[in-house]
Image 1 (cartoon, rainbow over the protein chains, first blue to last red):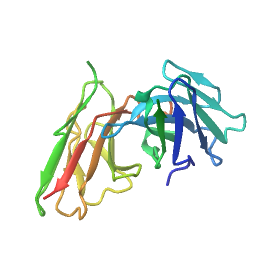
Image 2: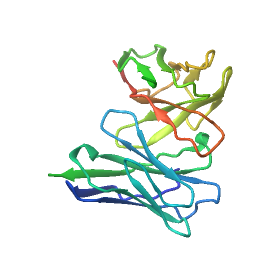
Image 3: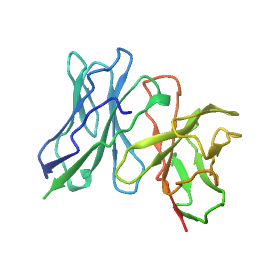
Length: 109
Length: 115
């Protein structure tokens, strides 16, 4: 079973920031938080990951709370091409990646 | 360009037949993985391999078999023992199978259907 809880769906206006929440209240000290997304009929695409500190790359920012029990993925300026299912995963190694149902983000014009 | 290639993109199988899905990577990654995805659901791990000539069962290995004779190749056979094989199959690889600081990279999947 997935160790995370995500809302099943969210909408966002094009050009606005998309903030996708994830709860992982049972996360262990050595587990990373990963975010992937999957556009229909394609393989998942890696977005970003982190352990304790906030992270930023060219795609997104990851904000992890101080107690590490939740995180937020931020897409700063959402476009229509960001419409996808977003998966939040906690894992300490790649043999234990649990993909739940994710959040279906719809970016609207 | 480096990446993971899965073939074919669509595959049809008659009941009672075995079928093999191909997965090749040129990323020089040590670890490779096979997942199954059913409609509207997340991914479930079938098998994984951390090094050549070694592989481990995942959560739903029954009815499937794999081999890892070469670092770049990790084919998956869906056997006739798999009672509900219709699904989207995804292959992935990662640099370091044991460390938690390396993401997995995925292919674009093979969609298997039963005739």
